[in-house]
Length: 219
Image (cartoon, rainbow, N blue to C red):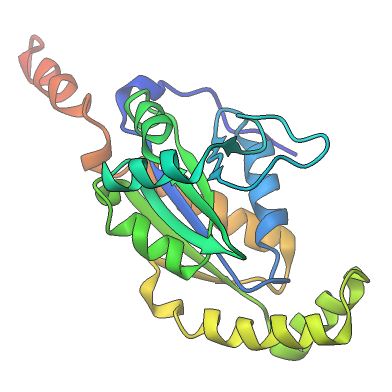
């Protein structure tokens, strides 16, 4: 797999890349491929109040914290998005994302439509690019879920119902990709990221560069 060419990352502001899809549409595979293509791309490590599971490392799999500390970060505006899931709190801390953004590094978020909404409405939302991945059809989505061999009929039915709710928010995203061919969808995802990185407003070094051009002899 070709990797992204080396670039002068200091000349641009980092992006917040929001990737959402219904379960089974290929989001996790696409996220993994995107990070293999560009190893400097960082994945947002969520904070959670649940206890670590065997083998999980603090700061690598999750930032493990207490409910009190988590809520304090929310109150201080230091969570880009957060939600309660089965009695535990989960969220995306702002500080490491902002630090990466200021270094010209992009951060990838694997979140649902609600998380994407919160990130776009956050203090860093102007730097967000949102991408929604659709399956080619609902029968194909169900086939993919069954092919995993991980879930019961009841769980699959629940995932399919949730998928319809997720898909209903497709129009809120900047880009929508139909994942009927994984390689083609990955290529489109790369193209989106490349184009967004080159937007004029995301290259703060362009102004001084152009002024230097204009001052060159013979301009």
